[in-house]
Image 1 (spheres, rainbow, N blue to C red):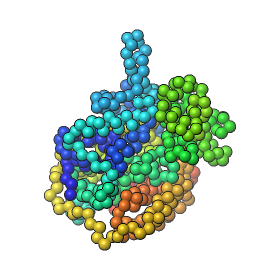
Image 2 (tube, one colour):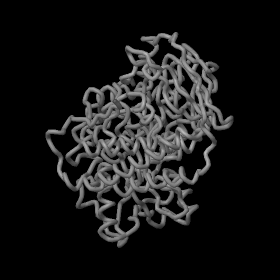
Image 3 (cartoon, rainbow, N blue to C red):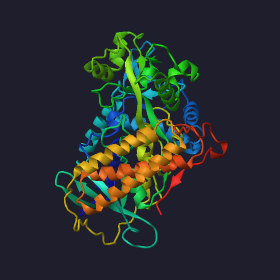
Image 4 (cartoon, rainbow, N blue to C red):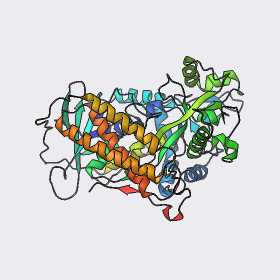
Length: 532
């Protein structure tokens, strides 16, 4: 039994920022699946969208977010997060974050923030650290956490399930009491207890065959919250990043939207620009539009990729602005200053998630969710580029304020330790590997960028069969990290399919050929699931 005041599941921006905020008031445990820097945040290239320029305004940022969200954003949430942004950015800088700067236009020799532009934004408002913004954020926050004696980080630990009062058989308000956590190094399960548990587990990109996400993104937070009785919503809105590097040896390397923001143009294999006919913003259209256009172009021509061409820009500018992308592509034999980049869409971001308010509160007392795992209503049917890190920053701050002002009571309930019972060691791990591969492949084929009712029905039927196999395997064998993650991606796959079947229209990131138009009756309507 490990007892803390705050239990944080995840070590990305949302989890670390929350931990730093509450550490002065109590002991904090940060549970993270691999090493402490391995998170979706760490792989974020683009940056954080926030109003920091005199040429920009909150109204403009709010308007761009609502437009991208296609009628599903909660306007009060959007305004709160946009307006809180600059103050949180200032705090991040105080913690040691170093954003890219450029020479100020006046003659005093000063510097100003170098603001980028990305798809769907009407102004330059993306704060970045060249093209490794996430890595720089992780560095700054982990350094700050290392200086805080009240924070203890448990690496190579994977949460299995949340512990709730209802699961323990107690009537009344359902309250989260902590989590059972698998220690991969010691091969044992610990019981972590805390009055406050916060899900900061990131997204679920690994539920798809092709993704820009790291291996840890298996939807653990959404799956655990759903099993505990929390509501999840809008899981059908999976954002496919339009431009992932296409190369047989590259493992889902993202080509940042900022490349298009700085003038990169999408072209067919014949070198013809095709976005002109799709949207007034051309290659800088919102991500759902660009991903569908690329998917259509590839299917129409039979091509395995399209080109992203920025060779018309000076080589020095490209190398200085995108050093990581330049060096990575060069490693695969592609000089982006001289030749176009082969790109394909890949699963990138989950706009739905565990239902919360803007303070991170879920429907279970003592359980909070912040960052990509949460569905606050900011993103609606399609996330505006670089709003995700902004949401993580603002909502982590607000969740910390909420828990410190409204202290959760410590429980006197007896919490049982984890019992393996008669479970034995897994005898055929090939079963786990096969099911893992099958789920990811069927999700890519049937529940991808373009869907149909028939494809969704096929996916639902096969996932149900796989879940039966996984259920038997889970209860008969001692847990492993691969088995736990398989169980979670199966749950998330089910949630995505069921939400997609509930929405009889095409809107934002959900495009169904059987309902090709948006249905006005479904504007401002969420698809909500809750385990009975």
